[in-house]
Length: 383
Image 1 (tube, helix red, strand yellow):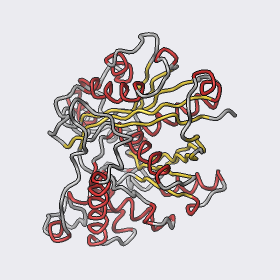
Image 2 (tube, helix red, strand yellow):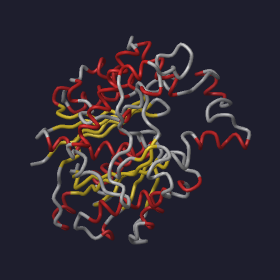
Image 3 (cartoon, one colour):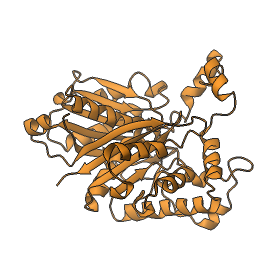
């Protein structure tokens, strides 16, 4: 099997709901990430074999294969195709996986993988609600096989976060302490310029809008999302807008085009778990990845796990035994936001840069996803 090398990874700053990116068309938002990526790497865009972009809720301005639209909106060659991937919150992480697999298999030499999401323009779950016009109340209920296996009850990430907190006996206070850590780390990272190498601007917009000054006292005063729940808005990822892009290349392309790899893809995989609990799949997915590679969680120098909810991360830490100091060193989605289709490659860019910053060898990325699945990517820093 051939190697898949990571040449570069970038992201836009993340805008909060109704913020700096709210009025930017998703194609232009994706184009900003693509221009930022291609503009700082000396490779002719015509040599890209495919553009693989993640995006959820692909209706309206995100419909019609946004990967292709964003590439063309960026002004790049019509000869380069594009494809849009929906693995829910892990969509752009799956895009990186597909790109790496294409290179490893020998069917492609250069892949651009990333994602885009404007949640201000197209609200979360808009695609799931769109079917109501046609008589479908949800994507699940009404399918005989689904109803027989899982019933007709609520399929909700909010309910899932509550069930996880209860099953792993994670208190609201513990989750609030993690959320506070996320904001503190994110603000510190911004102040110290830790995101500067990975961020490409959208116009004059450079800095993530999500992190805020908060306290345990402020969070303690919030009402739960549902009666009896331990989950509040402070313990969930922020609705956000953003885009991300990664450049992957084969060893042949590295030599042919004079590229300098920063890392290699060491492992890619995905696993599933209970779709009602929904957000627990990073636990078996991580265990599977470590078994396949012969590595341990202690071998990971940097870890990024998406903070869909604080309970997801804390349950994962309990099950894997990961060192919390290695996890989301610069904050997570609770502070920095979660632009669904862009988050995977966004976190990939943060993982790559932080691994270089700490002079580490291995970095691991995992994300919980709607439907009860999760991706794991392990990279090895070069040099």
